[in-house]
Length: 263
Image 1 (cartoon, rainbow, N blue to C red):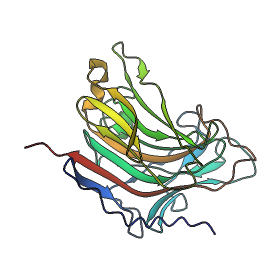
Image 2 (image 1 turned 135 degrees about the vertical axis):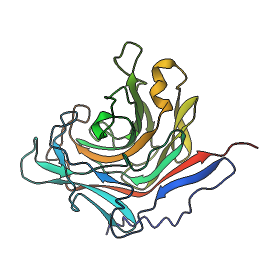
Image 3 (image 1 turned 90 degrees about the horizontal axis):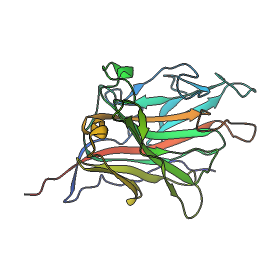
C-alpha cells in the first residue's frame, strides 16, 4: 500500500544565515484561507491547458499533514475540459521580496502532467494589480513536464526586456541520479537577494542568474507563491491512455526565510 503520509516532523530550518518569517505546515483539517486563494478558471485559460481549475475540496484538500492537489479525469475522452484540478496562490495575502522560499513536495508523474511551484509579481493585473504579465515578473521554482521526463525538473525566469517584449532566462534543469520525483518528497527552493536568484533541490544549487540588469527590475518587487497541477498544455504535451488518473501532488510544507543581516 502506497504511503503518502509525509510525517517529516522536520522543524523549520533555523541557522545564523536565515530566519523563518512565514510557513504553512498543513497541519489543520482544511486549507488555511488566510494564506491561500483557490483560482477558479476555465479550461484553456493558460497555455492551452486541458483542465479547468476549481475551488472544490475534491481537487485540493489536506490529508496526512499534506496539501494534496488532485487532477481528476472526468470522462473517457482526452481533450479540453475533460479534467479538473486546482491552482492555489497567496496573492493579496502573503508576498515577499527576497529571501529563501522552499517547499517539500512529492510530484506526480506521467505523460502530459505539469505540476509547478512558482511565483508572480504581486502587482499582476490578473489578481487586481495594474501590471500585465510578463512586466510583473515570474519566478519558476520548479516545473516538471511528464511528457519529457519524470526525473527532471526545470527552473526559469520570465520578464519584459528593454523593448517590452517577453524574455526569459532559459530553462535550467536538475535530474535525479536515481528514480523519479514521484518516488519521494524533495525540497525545492530559491535563494533570492538584490543581486541574484539561485535554485536548489535538497539544498544543492543547480542554477543561478543575476538580476542586476535594468530589464530584470521586476525581481526587485514583491512576489506571491503559486502551487498548481496542470494537465496538458503548450509545453507539457498531452495525456493519453498511458497516463494514470487521478494525479496527485503532495506538499508537506511551504516556508519562507529572510536573510539575517550581519552585525
